[in-house]
Image 1 (cartoon, rainbow, N blue to C red):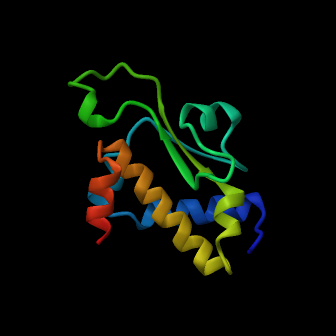
Image 2: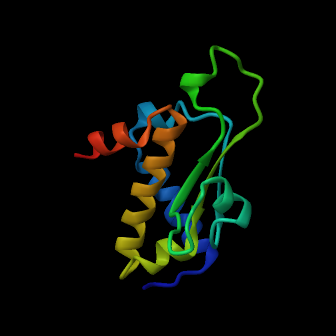
Amino acid sequence: MIEVDEPTFQALIDKAFDSLPELHRDKVQNVAIVTADFPSLEQRERLKLRGDQTLLGLYEGVPLTQRQGRQAFMPDVITLFRLPLQGMSADEDSLYENIRHTLWHEVAHYYGLDHDKIHELEQ
């Protein structure tokens, strides 16, 4: 496990976002990327997470594929959960890779991809 301060964690998120393919990165609009130590009780209940389960990241919003051309939506939110990400990372390099992978996964949800399609693309 590695522990980093919040500014370092945010810098790794910024670096990870900048590393996403430009075509996809530039089309992400009206999305807040935030951090939290862990999922909130409300998030855990909504997702029906068991006590032994946690999340590395979460996309909350209306995926582009479900907007039917409408623009009037509240900002989407991608939350990256700091303590689970740090807990699975041995050093800053692996933390960056875990952040990058999680951020890519959540951005894929923004584009409307489900877990099956995301896992297919990861292969």
